[in-house]
Structures are given as structure tokens and as C-alpha cells.
Length: 360
Ligand SMILES: [Zn+2]
Figure (cartoon, rainbow, N blue to C red):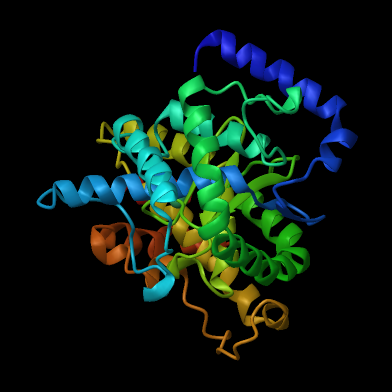
């Protein structure tokens, strides 16, 4: 994003906040925001959903064109019906294909989590979720300041998406939100305080914005910083049921786990060891799972889970999805041996990290 555009964008944000009452009246997108909740702010926004759907389709198209390359496109099977493929008119199909082609050329090779361009774009689309346009043609404050061609592409694809896919995505998003919200209301403050204590930091004072979307990235959810925002797929099989609470807090923990990473790096340097790239991430998975486990075994879980599954035997995400078996087995053993005592209050943070690193 050019500098000029971002300054303009900041101005527009300011204008938007001043125009809040007008903006509220202009909710043509029928976006859904569940609130007020503690800790998180859950959104189902039109543009961010359209953007991720186009990105997803562009990645699929790219992968289909080069089938031999291993592609991190969709993750486990999505909960979409086989007959869910919409029937588009030829004109709609053309608009949609053009938009996907634009995403193939401009974004499919970039990573949603690591590309600054894609992160800024996602955040801007989130900020303009209450606008039914992005160009500001009808309402000046709806000029999102995006590149002109992209604005045109998104506005042309919008009616097709709104007519065919958005209703399903929005319904899935709302269902996901309604399911996890009671758990967040009941357990959110306690969990956030416990996690911040563990990481020896504070949970962010501002609520963390969570964009719930039909598609997120290949891992099913991702978190970007400055501002701290989470995107979670409502259709991804890994994010369903009461487990959604763990996904939320795992992603939120990305915003506070920096002290862990810093401590690991410090200990490695002292011992002249190579810094293990993913140890901090395995630790965050482990910690969230262990903190959530007793909560989802308690009565509170019934508020969010109506399918009668046995919640007393909650299996944390990393175990359920086999993350440790895929290269993190050594970390898992270290975490059980040295980090768990810290979680149980039988060791200090510094000792636990030091012991893990010296055993690497
Ligand atoms: Zn993560």
C-alpha cells in the first residue's frame, strides 16, 4: 500500500468514527457483530468473506493448473455440501471468473499471514464492512482507499457473491459465533488472565477483533499484528463445536506469546544452540490446550455445546489434529516434562524454558 493511500486511509478512519451514527444507518451489507463480549469482538463481515473466498478459489485454480506441486490450499475437508456449487448465469460467471483471475495474478502466490499487502488489505476490508461499496461513489466515507482496479474487481464480484455464496457463509459464521459466544462470555476473562499470567505479560486491553469467514488460510485460522486481529474459518472442520474456544484463545495467544519466544532465544544464545523455529508455537498449542481442557470439562461447556458430546474428556487441538506427530514429538515430550511443572505451579517460567532448551 503506498504511503499516500495509508495516510488517506487513516483520515478516512477518523472520518468514519466521526460519522458513526450515519454509518450505523448505512448497514446495507447486513453484517453481523456479536456483542458485547469480553476479550473478543466477533464479526461476520461481507468484504472480508468475499476477499477470502476469492483468494481460496484463486489458490484452488492455481493448484489445479500445477497439480504436481504440493499445495497448502484448503486443509481438511470443508463442511460444504456437494450440491452447494452455485448455478451462475453466464454474465455472473464471467464477473466471478474475472475476479478470481485477478486474484490468481495478484494474490494467489502471496501468503495471507506473511504478505504485508494482504494483511493491510484484509484489515481495510474489515474496517469497511458496513459499507456496501468500496469506491465511495455513493457515500464518500465508503472510499476504502484501495487500488482502483481492486476496488472495481471487488465491487463487480460483490453482487455475484451476495446472491450465491454469502448467505451460506454468513449463516455458517453466525452459527459459529452463536456457539462460541456463551463460552467466551462465561470463561473468556478467566482464560485470558490465566494465559497472560503464564506468559508473564498482560492480555491486550482492547478487545481482539475476530473476523469469522467461510474461508481463512490453509491452517483454518490466522492472526496478524498491529492491529492484532484474528481470522477464523467457520467452515473448517478443525474449528467446530466447543473446540472453537481453544482455536480462539490459541489465536489470541499469538498476541501475547512474545516473552516465550524471547526467553527461548535468550536461552539458546547462552548455550550456543540453534534457535528451534517452532518450539514457541508448540508451546502455545500445548498451553492453550492445557488451560482449556479443565474449562471444557466443566459445566460451562454445555452452554456452547448442544450435541451431547462428552466434554469431560476434552482432547486439545494439537493432539486431536496430530500436530506433535508431524515433527513436534520431541517438543511434546519436553513440554510434558519441563513446561507442565510450570503450569502446575511447581517450577518457575525461567527454569522451565531453560530446562527445555538445555534438553534440546
Ligand atoms: Zn498458532
